[in-house]
Length: 226
Ligand SMILES: Nc1ncnc2c1ncn2[C@@H]1O[C@H](COP(=O)(O)OP(=O)(O)O)[C@@H](O)[C@H]1O
Ligand SMILES: [Mg+2]
Image (tube, rainbow, N blue to C red):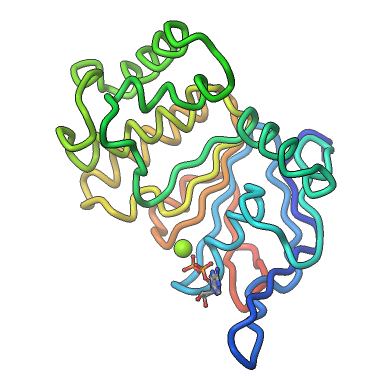
């Protein structure tokens, strides 16, 4: 076990819901080591998205810790935590969340622009990334001019363009037909592997989940080897 991983220790997440409290995560210990791929499956409502949001430091655990490269992420203030997150993590969600008025290149370059990279340099890297993902003929198209699979490939480019240490994906093929699901899954695993980034995938798509080196089942707030 190295110190370089993305790790959850004793993570609980509760959501107050009227009179009762939903205990969605009930003691999660998980390590995604550098360069390793880990998938988490579970039925709808099991808490997969909640777990990904907490590990991605987009949401705060009720108890427990999240460490990235040995840094206790929730001991940082919001600004410092966002800076580490923007630099070291990349996200892919079920919906692409591309900005409608921007081209594929501009969308894919956004993480670099946010980090302060010069627009020309950001666009150059985004262009390379899009070409690698097979979108060389779609660089200046806007999201509405792209198919669902192409939109999601732009979202993958955006998640990888800043060479994050870890990519976190929440149902990245959940909005695609089976052919596009297979293609986007292959592209995502391939591009992450080439960069030797770590990968945390949460999905109910078992055929995608089984491409990861390790798999867990999230059930009743806990993880089980799968
Ligand atoms: N922000 C929230 N406030 C209240 N309840 C939530 C919130 N987010 C998720 N939940 C509840 O937590 C449970 C797990 O949700 P989620 O993590 O989205 O599951 P999954 O991604 O496995 O389908 C569900 O019962 C859901 O309604
Ligand atoms: Mg979900």
